[in-house]
Image (cartoon, rainbow, N blue to C red; front, side, top):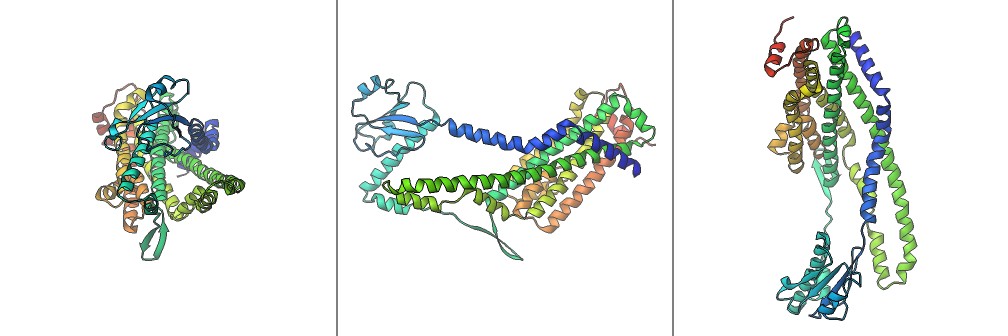
Length: 441
C-alpha cells in the first residue's frame, strides 16, 4: 500500500506542477465565460436594423407594421416601377410589393432585393403581413382589435414536486440544463483524463523507464497508482473550477443587476413624456430579472446531492475507463496502434451521450432506467436523471454496479498490463490480448 501511495503522489505532483495544469485551471472558467460573452456581444453588435420599403396597392397595410430593433418599415407613395428604379439609391434592404388582392391571394406578395434576402428578414416580413391579414379577417368577422389583445394570455406555470416529505418548488429548465451539463462534463473528463493515463503508460514503456520501475514495483501497483493519481488531478481541477465558477456567477449576478436598475430609473423620466410611456414603464417594472430567475431556479435543485453524485460518478466512470485505457497503453508501442483497441472502449461512452438525450426527455423511461444501471453508460445517463429525482434503491444499485464494474475492468486491465508493459516490437491483436488475460504467474 505504501508503494501505491508513493506512485499516486508522484503522478499527482508531476501533473499538478505543470504550467499547463495551472493555466487551464485558472483560465478554464474565464475562457468559457469569455467565449460566450464574446459570442453574445458579437451577435448583438452585428444586428443592423433593416430598412424595408413597402408598396401597398391594397391600401390596408399603410402604417400598420410595427418597427422593432431588426426592421423599419416605410411606405413610399409611388408606383412599383418607380420604386424599383430608386430602390438602390434609397439604400433599402428590401422592397415589398403587396397587391390589391392580397387578402384572397397572399402568395402574390413579392420581395425585391439587390441580393438574396436572408431567411430571418424574409420571415420577419412574412410574419408581419400574415399577422395583419389575420387581424383584417378577424375584424371583418366582427372581432375587434381590443378583443384580440384581451384574448392573448401568457401562461407562466409554477412547477411543484410532490414527495413523501411534502411539496417542493422545482424548475424544468434549470433541471434540464444542470443534468445535461453534468453529463457532458463527465463524458469529456473520462475521455480527457483516461487518454492521459494511456499516454503516460506509453511514454514510460517506449522510453524503457518502466523496466527500472518494474524491478521494485508490481505492474498492478504501478497501474493502480497511475490511475488514482491522475484521478486526483482531475478531481482537484474540477473542485477549483466549481469554486471559480460559483465566484464568477455571483460576481456576474451582482454586476448585471445594478445596470438594469440604473437604466430603468434613468428611462423613467423619458417614459413619462411619451405616449403610452406609463404603460411601458409599468410592464418594465413588473418584468422579471433573468439573472434572478436563473439563481432562483438553481436554488430549487438538491445541489448537495447533485454535487456528491457528480463526484462519485466522475471518479467511478473515470476509474472504469482509465483502467481499459491503461491496458491499451501497455499493449501497444505507438499511438497509431491504439486505434483498433480504442473503438470498443469508445463506443459505450459515445452511446451514453445518445442515451442521455433520450433520458432528458423521459428520465423514468425504460431505456433511461437500464442505461443508468449499466456501468459503462451509468456515469453519464444517471447524472441526467438525478436532478429530475431518482428513487434511492435505483441510485444505490447503479452505484454498486459501477463499483463492481470498476473492479472487473481493473482486474482485466491488470492481467493485460502485466504482460504488455514489457512486450516490445510485437503487433498485438484482440486474440493475443485474450491469451494474456489467462497467462499464469
